[in-house]
Length: 350
Image (cartoon, rainbow, N blue to C red):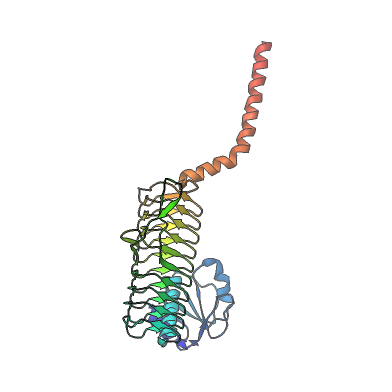
């Protein structure tokens, strides 16, 4: 597929500087792009490549001041990074537009309902009373248990498993190997020291515009629903336990874990390998640093925490500074002790 600078500018409401009819057919990193490729510049540290790149079209920020002559056609926008994302999204959607039909072998229950322009990849399984919205793409080896609902325009990549009764919203992207709706980790201790499994009869609800990374697991609730709210973004290899709620537009980086029944607010940012205990509340706008261990509720919005156990980020930084200064402080204390000893000797002589 080829696109002219004029077509791209119309898509992202950009201003063209150069030839509006120059065309591109692929994408490239600014420092490596060649003729016929589209690139972008958002990070100032890559500005030097703006003057050496072979890209035919470059998307740049409106505020960027050009210091040298550039052969490429420029498209200026307020936010080059976001605009490039819009273009990549449009390109991906066009590439998937013709991906329809049911590949064989697959199993689709007679009671399943499929919308228009649905794609079902080979070796997929769609159980009883499954409901699939329009334009949904199910890649090979996707498993959908009984009564699962998938909203329109959602994409499930190879090997995704959605267990019975779970609900996936519209425009959701679930990457390869995810398991959604497996049993929560619920066991009742017995008098003899054994553990009796507690049936997990709830489900998982993933609302609209959520993205879930590869091999992430989200457990079904004991009762009610484990909920991932609209706009949340979950990275790869995350564990979300039963009855957890993840707020709107919250982002969680890889290898993090959230224990059962914890409620995480809206617009929270959680760094990689963070661990959060169960039955607590994380306020809106909280920022949890990577590898932090959160052991109690964070009730004040927009709080930043770090460490294990996690505590106020500002206090943590001051503690780190003090720790680094300990050798110098020890040296100064020894000097003061020597001065004091000398002062004592002088007093005795008097």
